[in-house]
Amino acid sequence: MIRINLLPHREEKRKERRQQFYMLTGLMVALGAAIWLLMHMVNAGSIDRQDSRNRFFQTEIETLDRAIAEIKDLRGQINRLMARKQVIETLQSNRAETVHLFNELAARIPSGVLMTTVSQSSNKITLKGYAQSNARVSLLMSSLNESPLLENSEVVKSVAELLNTRRVYNFEVNVYIEKSAAPDDETAAQAATTGKG
Image (cartoon, rainbow, N blue to C red; front, side, top):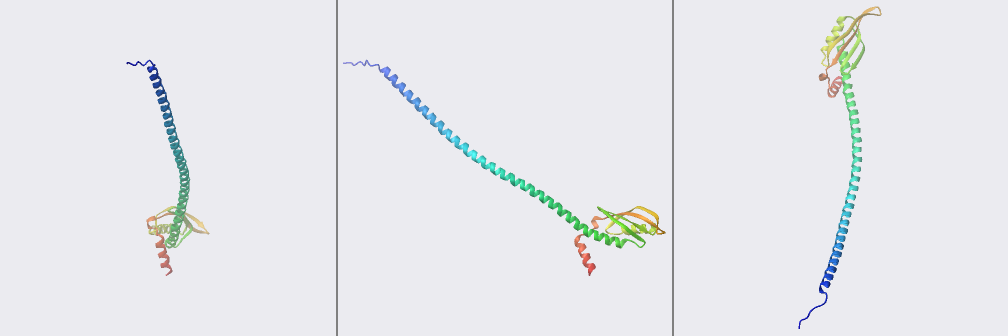
């Protein structure tokens, strides 16, 4: 005998498919929401880690900025100390040079010449004084030119005057220190030791 199914099987299959579709859609929405939540948590964690790194880097940068400022201050202090050291070294070398200069002038001034002023500007020495005659001024210049410490003497003026009823020549002579021939501190020390012995 033939059985005929008179139930609306198509309606049931359609209803069953619709339920499967809704269930799959719900699962897909839930899965999408879970994936979104997971990605959001991962991104939030990454942002937090990056923020903590940025804070660490900012702290380190501020520390380095302070260290750089201290280094600049130290460099300024070093430059000031080096400038002071240079001034002291210059004074030390000039001290020996002055002693040698006066020794040399005392040895080179001929009789009949009286020095009233000796002044120095850089390597230029200005000598002022009185001489018995112009010949004595010329002799002074020749003597200065023979010095290993001095060079290029030149007369600025030589004027005849009366001084205590005596005729004298008021003179001014410029002479220059020869830097290459200026003795150093060691030579000065040896000369001082030899002079004492």
